[in-house]
Amino acid sequence: MLSRIAESLFWIGRYLERAEDTSRLLEVHLTLLLEDPVVDEEATSEVLLRVMGIDGEASPDHQTVLQLLGWDETSLTSMVAAFYGARESARRSRETVSLEMWEAVNTTWNMMRGNRLQHVPAHRACQLVRERCAVVGGIADTTMTHDEGWQYMMLGRQLERVDMTSRIIESAAYNADSPYAWTQTLRACGAHHAFIRTYRGAATDAQAAEFLLLDRMFPRSVLVSLQAAEEALASLEATTGGRRVGLTGEALRALGRARAELEFGSLEETMAHLPERMSRLQRTCSAVNDAVSDHYFDGAGASVWRAGVR
Image 1 (cartoon, rainbow, N blue to C red):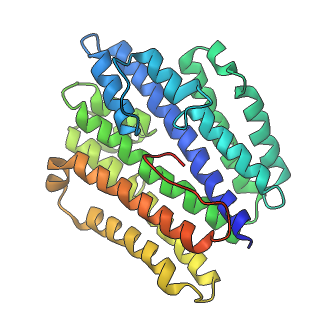
Image 2 (image 1 turned 60 degrees about the vertical axis):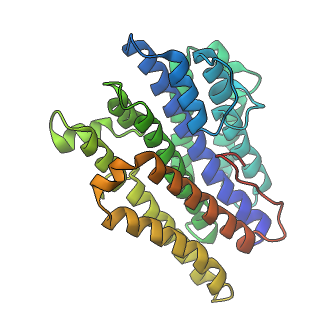
């Protein structure tokens, strides 16, 4: 497969997942401000922006957060900009993505472009983005051949999911004083209903963290996402016929170390150093991204991954 096409498919997966997760995180942030009357809006907004890699905003409020993470097409961390990235990546790989998938992506972008989401209530706009990402993902799943190109897309999707979930958990760790912090975190990860069904009632913050990090039956947990990324990368390595075993092995080893540390480490120690552990996961995702880009996408346009931004 041409490196240009492979890179585009990889970034379709990343951008779609980033748009969906950013919409979840933004909606939960707005809900937290509504439900918790004593929450410090400025401090909470600063934490959220910092977790998303945005520093230097003076006295941010929810409107600042909405612009930077929601509607601003020029902000590389916004859900609208992420979906635009998915659309451009799909346009560059039209010969590989299915017609139905391209139409879904392009139609969705036309619903967002030109600040159109700003004319919709914020919660509805976040829900719209999340639903459209699910539609595109579902169409891709059922209309694309699950071949090498599909594995690139799945690798990008799972790598982004690990990165974004770790950022959401890191945000909860910084807001641990709020009684709503972990409930909102579960909602941000789409895990609240599954968590309640699993624990059947009130549970501790540690159990919420354990569920998001280690649950083997929840498809958005960090452990499941790491395993899926490993499987996709192993499949891609096999298709190279051993040409890049030493090079792609570097990315596989990084994913394997992160999974093993999470799977076999002490939950108590992880909880005691949760922000640092989540930051380490984000650095792992960045390292894997760089290794994959260097050795699969050589000859394509260079991609730079800094603080969750391409």
